[in-house]
Image (cartoon, rainbow, N blue to C red; front, side):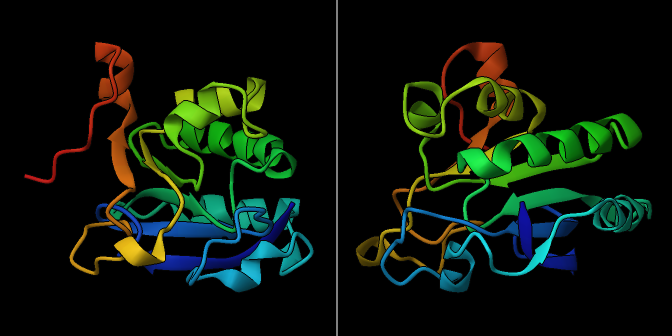
Length: 173
């Protein structure tokens, strides 16, 4: 897996101050994507043990609310295993930090037979607190939306979704 960029002290990609990791590789190729450079799986730098240690250390301060994983596409099959291993370490080290993940796949696509589906995808959904799902649609772009770029995208509270058995959107009130 390659990392396109890491943003420390990010406030744009989830609630609170976060570390945000942008992985490389995406086959969606959404029109007007904000991170087109990360479509290339070879873009950026290889994910290493040193990278992992930097990410873990960045989460230590109390003012850091959690981690967000974006792309590229975290649910591309090539990225899933490494992301899961990292998120498991984060959950074990910082159990009270939230984990957000963005995907161009919908929740339903991740669960039901797309190229994103499978063991690692299911485990990612189980370890994450929030999924922002759906492809960016340029014609539905709305800069007033919280944590998403187009109105078709959803901010799903995965904890409540698991608890209630139905997709439950995150409440911002």
